[in-house]
Every structure is written in structure tokens, then in C-alpha cells.
Length: 409
Image (cartoon, rainbow, N blue to C red; front, side):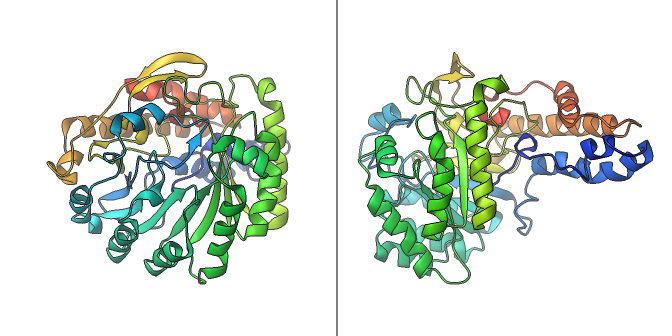
């Protein structure tokens, strides 16, 4: 999983432009700016954050299941899941076989999609296949059916990381969002992971979709994570919307004063994370266009449960959406389809090349503009530097322009 956008970081009093502004000459700023430059640019340099050997693809996200056993209030895939039908919502073995052929060329396999990953009966074997090929492996689950037997099988397969979706620190809030789940059972299942895993892992995390209905429980969720022996908590936006599903639930805004309450809640969660030794990851509350999103199609692909290959899950399933408060249409983008085509053929398709080249050009233009600006004699505000880079970039693809991922929220 890739994480971290520049606007999600917090300025330090020393070692950055603001620190230099309060005391020092332009020569001091020039000595510091290479380090600051790396903080600005490194999150967008594909594949470097993972520390994996160089492979053809940094990440292939595999939708093992679109089927789900819950009815979450913010789920964008409800109508798409109904259209697929119960029998057609699981990835078929022949689709996985087409991916398995190229596993030695993949750095990391994320088995998360639009449904509950553990509903895929072949999951443990697929994780083992990827592990044996030298891939990092992981997935996100609601953990309702994470039985001890399945957990032990996943541990035997050397799963790298395991994420659990929990959007509340109390049964009332959590079960009001994850309809059909059991807060108590999920806590028991998650705590079992910490008790059974060995020293080597898997790393565990809680992912919380932050909405107006649960933002007040962010700090309490960090405390719960510590009690359950969880390593990390990732707070994310309710950022994927299809039709009315998920619409109006996010806490982002173009105005800082409209998200002050969420800012305070997340700040308290960060403090609790530092106190308890729980790593915290979070999103931006206000949009800023990025040269490339976290998914980064320059080095990754998303494989839908039915074999369609796309840049990401958002473009895998097009349809009516809502972008920064206005209705829009998310175009569907598919490179090819497995197993009729190979993953290598999808990667070399005209559409895939278009996305890779476009993001490469955007990154190059962004980097040039940022470096030129930072090489000046006077220290500049970090956000002004980033804005300068944004203005220099070629326009993003149609689908990306209505996708919150490209704006860090």
C-alpha cells in the first residue's frame, strides 16, 4: 500500500522553509532545500517507498471478490454488485491463473476490491502463490468471517499485511455504519491476529472511513487499536461515490474553516497515536491537485473480479459520481480483459500507454517547476511551491479530473 501526500504532512519548525524564514540567510535556505525538495517530490516517485526489488510492476490490485456480506451506508458498489449477481461477483480461478503466470514480475499484490475479500474461497491459496513468487501480499477485510482456521491458513501463507475496516470505536457507531456486522466479533477476530502472528507479521492496520457521523471517535479508535494490538490506523475519506451511494458523507471542503472540527479530531488522534505507539495515516481535508495519485498507474494496475484490467478501481467501474460537491460522470477505462488477454498485453495496450505517458509528463513538468522555484534565493511557502508545480502540468485525463484521489482527499 502506498501512503503519503505532501499536503498530508505537517510542517516542522526546523529543517524546512518556515524554520529558515524565522532565522537565517538565503545561504542557509539553499543548504536545506535539497532535503525539503525530497519531501515534496519523493511520494510521487513510483515504487521507491516500498523498498522492493525492481520488478516490472510495483503493484497489481486484484479484486478477489465484489460480493459482500454487509450493507455499509457509504458503499459505492451496491448497484454494481446487484448487477453482477451472487454467482458472478467472485473472481474465477482462470482469471487468477493469468495473473499467477506473471507473479515474478509483480512487487506487491493487494487482494482488496469492492467487496469482502474473505468471501473468495481460494484466497489462502492465492496469497500463498504470490508469497512464493516473492510478492508482498495483503488485503482489506471487514473481518466478520475471519475465523481462527482461516487466519492460521493466511499466516501459513506468510501474508505481509492485514487491514480491517472499522469505522467506529463503539458498537453503536460502528454497527450503524457497517450494517449487518458485529462490533464485538470483529474486535475478537482482530485481537486474535495479534495473539497468533509471529514476530515477522503480518503487519495489522485499521482503516476508518471518516464521515460526519463518526469523526468524533477518531481518537477513541486509536485507543481501541492499541488495546487490540494493532500497528497502524489509516483514516481515509468517503471519497468514492456512485449515484447517491456515499454522496454527501465526506468531510472534505475547499475551505479550511468548514472542516475545523475534523481537523481537531484528527489532531487528537495523532496525539493518541504518538502516546500509544500506533502509526497514524490520514488524508487531506482540503483538495490540492497532485501530479499523480497514490495508485500511480505508471507502475500499477487494477484487475476487476471479472478480469477487466484498469488503472484503478475508480475507473474500473464508471458511472454517476459526485466530485467536490457537484455531480459528474466517471468514465470507465479498461485496458484489456483476462484471461483472454495477458497482463503483459494489457500493460502494452494503447490506453495503458496513454495513462503511463500522461502521468510521466505530469510528473516531469511538476518536478521541473518545483525545483526551479526552490532553487531561487528566497525561501517560499511550501504550498506556493506545490501550486507552481501544479500549474506547470499538462491536464489530467477526463476520469482523473473527477476523481478525489488525484486531489489527495
